[in-house]
Structures are given as structure tokens and as C-alpha cells.
Length: 116
Image 1: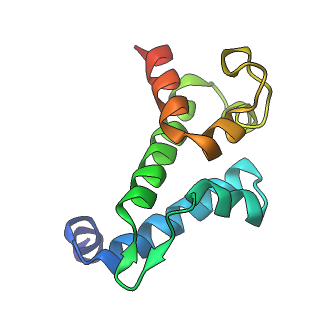
Image 2 (image 1 turned 180 degrees about the horizontal axis):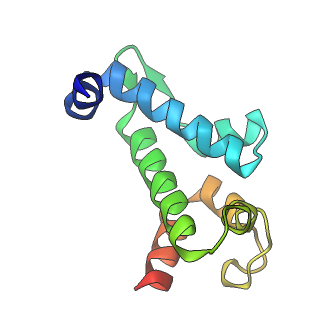
Image 3 (image 1 turned 120 degrees about the horizontal axis):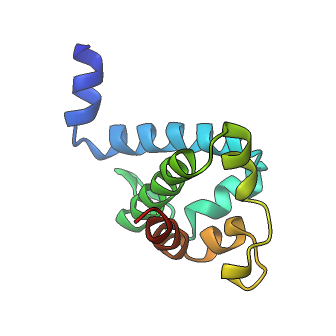
């Protein structure tokens, strides 16, 4: 329990970045993303010596929220995971993944609105 508390309360940017990337990787695996798609989700903001940029961490935070919302919205894990790659009329026929790559907040807001 102590280790979990340390991770949750640690503000060392390198540890926060490492943890965020590990969780993002698990989400990418669940969604069946390629390595390239996973990297595209991070955007162009990249890393610094002290960890991920604030913009990159914000993108990852949005992706975490999308993942959580999908788990709430769909009755099965398979449905939640497959939704991300299906064309969606709310995104003009684009997949949620392509919108996430361009602007994760758009998908997050859409799902938040669906759950409200």
C-alpha cells in the first residue's frame, strides 16, 4: 500500500511521466493500437529531461478519461475497446482514434456529454 500511496502523491515529473506512459501503454494494448498510433496519441509535445511536457500529460489525462467513460458507457470490455476504431457520425464519419490523435479533448467532451 505504501508504494501505491507514494506513486499517487509523488510529484517528481519523471515518476509521474513514467507512470502515465505505463498506463497509456496498457490502454493502447486494450484498444489494439499499433506502436505508431500509441505515439501519435502523445502528440508532438514530447519529452524533456524532467519528464513529459504539460501538454503531453494533459493529452494522456484526456485519454484516461475516454477509457474510463467507455468502460462506464458500454456493457462489455470488447464493445468499449472496439468503439475507438469504428467510424462515428458525431465525428463526421471519422474514428474516435483519429479525433483523439488530433484533439483528445473533443472525444473526452463528447463522451462526458453522453454520460451526463
